[in-house]
Image (cartoon, rainbow, N blue to C red):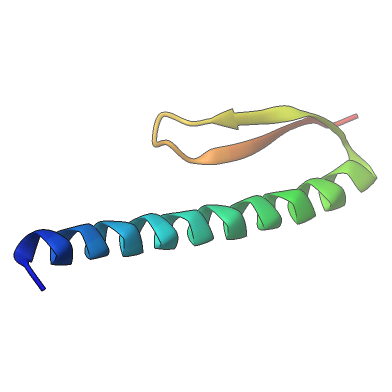
Length: 60
Protein backbone atom coordinates (compact mmCIF):
# COMPACT_ATOMS: atom_id res chain seq x y z
CA UNK A 1 0.00 0.00 0.00
CA UNK A 2 1.46 3.32 -1.03
CA UNK A 3 1.57 6.47 1.07
CA UNK A 4 -0.99 8.02 -1.28
CA UNK A 5 -3.49 5.22 -0.63
CA UNK A 6 -2.93 5.53 3.13
CA UNK A 7 -3.68 9.26 2.98
CA UNK A 8 -6.76 8.63 0.86
CA UNK A 9 -8.02 5.95 3.28
CA UNK A 10 -7.48 8.29 6.21
CA UNK A 11 -9.35 11.02 4.37
CA UNK A 12 -12.27 8.64 3.80
CA UNK A 13 -12.25 7.65 7.48
CA UNK A 14 -12.27 11.32 8.53
CA UNK A 15 -15.19 12.04 6.21
CA UNK A 16 -17.14 9.08 7.60
CA UNK A 17 -16.42 10.21 11.18
CA UNK A 18 -17.52 13.77 10.41
CA UNK A 19 -20.69 12.48 8.75
CA UNK A 20 -21.56 10.27 11.71
CA UNK A 21 -20.88 13.14 14.12
CA UNK A 22 -23.13 15.49 12.14
CA UNK A 23 -25.83 12.84 11.90
CA UNK A 24 -25.80 12.46 15.70
CA UNK A 25 -25.88 16.24 16.20
CA UNK A 26 -28.90 16.53 13.90
CA UNK A 27 -30.67 13.77 15.82
CA UNK A 28 -29.99 15.56 19.13
CA UNK A 29 -31.14 18.88 17.73
CA UNK A 30 -34.34 17.28 16.45
CA UNK A 31 -35.07 15.83 19.88
CA UNK A 32 -34.26 19.14 21.59
CA UNK A 33 -36.55 21.00 19.19
CA UNK A 34 -39.40 18.65 20.05
CA UNK A 35 -38.94 19.37 23.77
CA UNK A 36 -38.63 23.13 23.30
CA UNK A 37 -41.68 23.18 21.00
CA UNK A 38 -43.80 21.71 23.80
CA UNK A 39 -43.42 24.94 25.79
CA UNK A 40 -42.24 27.65 23.37
CA UNK A 41 -42.53 28.75 19.76
CA UNK A 42 -39.50 27.59 17.76
CA UNK A 43 -38.40 30.32 15.33
CA UNK A 44 -35.56 28.48 13.65
CA UNK A 45 -31.97 27.32 13.84
CA UNK A 46 -28.96 29.64 13.65
CA UNK A 47 -25.18 29.39 13.75
CA UNK A 48 -23.11 31.35 16.27
CA UNK A 49 -19.80 33.11 15.60
CA UNK A 50 -18.13 30.06 17.16
CA UNK A 51 -19.78 27.90 14.46
CA UNK A 52 -22.13 26.20 16.90
CA UNK A 53 -25.75 25.55 16.00
CA UNK A 54 -28.47 26.87 18.30
CA UNK A 55 -32.25 26.63 18.38
CA UNK A 56 -33.92 30.04 18.38
CA UNK A 57 -37.26 30.23 20.16
CA UNK A 58 -39.54 32.80 21.74
CA UNK A 59 -40.70 32.78 25.34
CA UNK A 60 -44.31 33.81 25.86
